[in-house]
Image (cartoon, rainbow, N blue to C red):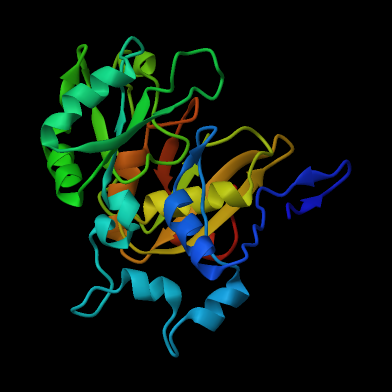
Length: 283
């Protein structure tokens, strides 16, 4: 069943698949979770009502996955990833003339590789987006590759690596990475409310964007709130991220400012906390 809405009717981006046996559904969730379809990562799970029925009494399913054995929520990004994600390394800034087989040859020195996914260019004007996802047979191999290959120069370009899946809408293509360094304003080390601009075009904000930004920013610390706002008649999109700790906001700002989101260069700035609290989002 694929729900649709609007006029004319269009799919809402999700579907329900009913199996004759629970075991088949469980296997499908395990195999298809985080699978890339047309360059986008799939999220697969049970319907909310079914989750509540199958969860242990008193245990929230999401917390059961993120709570380390010693108590408290782990600050290690790998600790909140699925088992499949912990075996993956996303590699960006890969030159356009690099073949999939070459990436496999380079990374297989760290252990057995089960698959290499090429993230396609959204505009279809380039050979690929400059980002590949390498999945290893073991988490240890992925961790070793992440540590050893971060900043490694391939074709004169420094690679950027991420644990798990690539960041939202992937990193810039290699052509952009080879360009002259960007002149960016420095940001403070502590930012309680981070404002992100130029993530998408005017009027293009949606729930997927908010979820992607939240997932990315959560790598730096606890996110308390995500707020999207369209400015003026142009409807230029601003995304505000409120962090629990100002130091986490500073790290997120440093990492995201000037980074490429699709084909757009992100602008990250610190935003006044009182103005944000008062709902004044157009300063």
